[in-house]
Length: 284
Image (cartoon, rainbow, N blue to C red):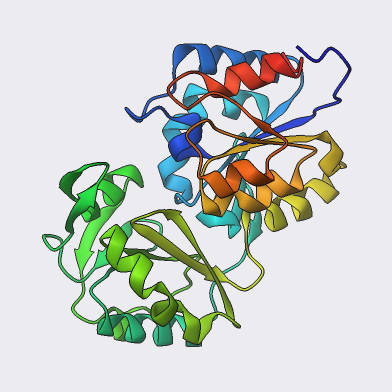
């Protein structure tokens, strides 16, 4: 264990592949470690591509609504105070690009998903069967349940969406997305941000939006410097928070390029990697 005072005031956690095990659960050891950190005055930030509504249960399980954590959702397009529900940061896609992106996606074998506060809108609720986590499943059902959304079909999303979006989520077979992502995203790469959160998810947000950019803006208002931050992640959309923090930690199950930029590589999400790193650096 490193015994020097790391002066960590904030722990930033990606969710899927980081906080959650492969069974989509928070292990009891990790939960106890994070509650202990909060009892010691350290703020917890959940930083995910998930919608805010898909983080509510995790917030309650970790008692973040009691200790005043932050929910950083939509890959950094929105930040919400877990205690008060106040939105502290919110950036949406320019409407002109929402229409252009959704129209462009019609040329590819992908599944676009968009949402408002209640509904997730798709072309076909039964048309989401792709291979994820080693098995064939309906990605639309998975995403809508994870975000606590009702489902609504719209034949033409490009013509339908006239409301603000924090993110456009694109799902598809992993190999297909990898082979076609340049053609999918290159027309918009100068105006928008895009990143893989899993091999079968590509997520589009407004320009200059990523997890660290949003967090930095809110942290400045709360007098938290990046030298006070410890971050955990596993995927490409976690790059910004790993690079931003004084201690950027890659999970043992992280992509190799995330391990390459991290200050520390911990155990996997199935081996209490978060708890291990917090103990290693003397944070708890």
